[in-house]
Image (cartoon, rainbow, N blue to C red):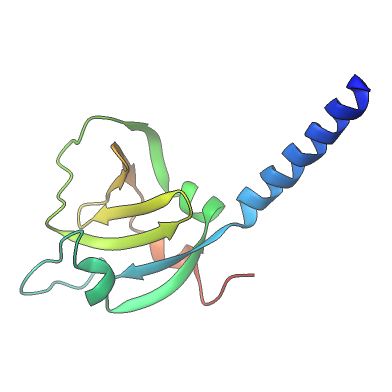
Length: 122
């Protein structure tokens, strides 16, 4: 009985892991190479974004540099460029390439950002 339970849980884990790789989220953004007269805030970026696409979770994670930290390191909530709506909550990226995911922050590779975006989710 215990072996069957363990095998069942291992099967669920492998499905969940695979699902994380293919999880896809909506992206609302203003390209990093475009300067505006006024900046967008976390509250306005989703509504006022110039472009809308999708991103796979593994593509997003490949652009996060280093580990998340509770240190803000200059994160600018009043100069947001990207809003990503993953199931676990929203992710914001500011104009300098700092990511805010909940109360954690990290650096982000803005040079490669648009190269991992897709037109639709699988």
